[in-house]
Amino acid sequence: MNEAYICSECHQTYPVKDMLWKCKCGGVLDLLEEKVAFQSENIHHHLPTMWRYVDALPFSKEADSWKRVTMGEGNTPLISLEPNAPNTYVKVDYMMPTLSFKDRGAAVLIAKAKELKLESVIADSSGNAGTAIAAYAKRAGIACDIFLSSSTSPKKPFQSAPSF
Ligand SMILES: [Zn+2]
Image 1 (cartoon, rainbow, N blue to C red):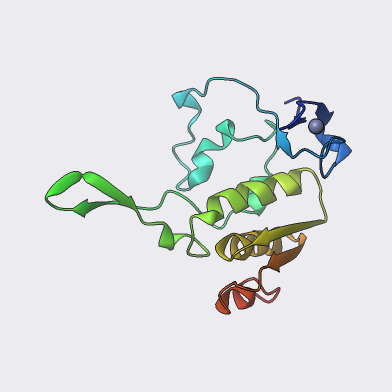
Image 2: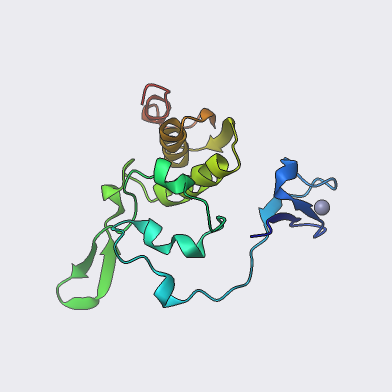
């Protein structure tokens, strides 16, 4: 995979190895996606987690950083919300490792950070994302600082603490 960042404002691209915070114009950088159709035969059905779809995620083919990060996230149950409305389903994401759907994004983010050999990450969060990023960073052995607003629930700083 020939990875690059692209600026959301001016569309300038940069190699991922440059480790930039933002574009020279000040714009936010996004990972430039390869537009390759995902084939269903690329689903790793033997994996009981979201990593069954790893081939659709932005990792190099040889990358296995996710194996050192995963805590079994994803593939949560899908239950019928109402017996009389059988086509309405709810994903039971409180069964995720930090009890939040934020684990999916945090696991991918930290696995990518591990692949890029980053030693530390920072994030700002109103709560659950900070908890998830802190948990996965700890799992990966990556230092992590989480910035929470003063309006954050008092339980959230405790959840994001390094001793988690
Ligand atoms: Zn730019």
